[in-house]
Amino acid sequence: MPADSIEPRLDISREGDRILVRFVNCTSLNEYSSDRIGQLLADLGAKQPEKHVVLDMSNIQYLTSTVLGHLLVLHKRLAAGGGRLTLDNPRPAVREVLHVTMLDQVFDIQPADQTAA
Image (cartoon, rainbow, N blue to C red; front, side, top):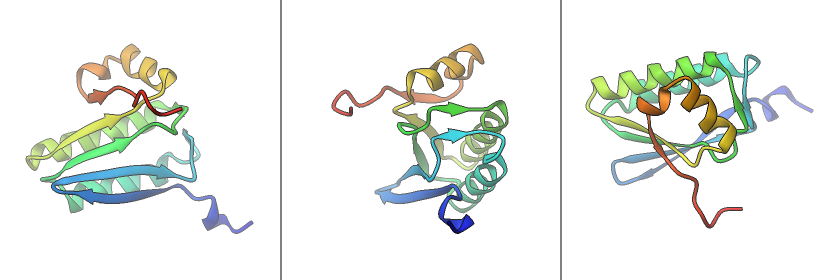
C-alpha cells in the first residue's frame, strides 16, 4: 500500500465565512501523525486567519498532548487574526481529555450531532 494513501490529511470545505475541516485517514491523532497534523493545521491557520474554522472531531478516538498543543497554536493564530476555532462533535474520550486538561474552558466545543451514529 503506498505511504501517501494512509497519510493523514484534511478535507476542507467552505460554508460562507466558515471553514469546515474533517480529518481523513486517521482516527487517532497520536505521536506518529502529530507532525503532519501540526503542519496541516499551521498551514490552515496561516491561510485563513480571519475565518471561523470548525474542526469535525467525530471520527477522532484519541489525541495526544502534542496534538493539543497544535490545536492551541491554531486557536491562538485564528484569534489573533480575528477568526475563531470550534471543535465539533468530539467523542466522549476526546471530550474527557479536553476536560481533564481544562482546554474545554479555552476551546469552543460543540456537542456531538444527536442524529449521528
